[in-house]
Image 1 (cartoon, rainbow, N blue to C red):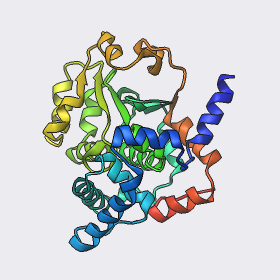
Image 2 (cartoon, one colour; image 1 turned 120 degrees about the horizontal axis):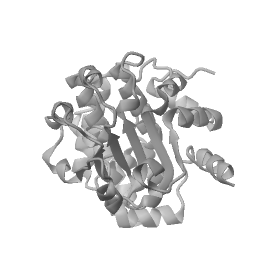
Image 3 (cartoon, rainbow, N blue to C red; image 1 turned 120 degrees about the vertical axis):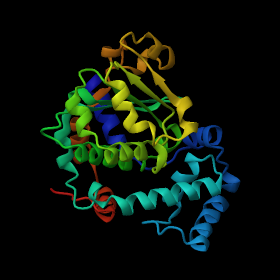
Length: 293
């Protein structure tokens, strides 16, 4: 039964359709209203052309909608986000152009995702720095994986509305890990969690930190906007404080939770490869990724 549920969930990872329940949730969470939605999208599209501050890869309704949902349909804020997004793509083409999408599965367990999406929590992703081998995969590979994963998630209306939660696990982190995280890599990671992409998390949790935290976190601190600080929570090895914020039903057993839906990013990529369709391949190729059969 459990495996059957997972297969259904994996198949739904590529479902870009909207349903009445989702639209009702979008109204509550994103202040999205059926009677003004089309006009807000057109206003954003007009602003793009009138201001000329960016040249988006797309300007169709579905693409622009994700930026409006992120900013509760405040058009000027959605536009600023879109400008940052386009700038990010121009600055760092090596994160996606010519990158083998399915080859990113090699990262294995350094990233984990939970496909049990809940209101207020959304999609939980876990970055386990201690499980990442910098000798095998350079820091840019870590960012390439996160970027591809986020872009695929942003195709899903469900996740545009529900958002996500990020857990950064520092267990077993060493100076080798810290040394491999250059300021550029740190800035790119911050961009991926809301500075540039329309996917600001509901909350960010730093768990299992030790004395290296000060060195580690200094790399990121300078890039994090002040308004984002109230979303960041620090937890030591006693993770009761984490469970007070995130329902244990959404957490894996290692954090005292009961969720069985956490999988490695390698497994997730392989399942996306199994269930993807021609539309998915075409879109990702248009974005620049390399899709190998």
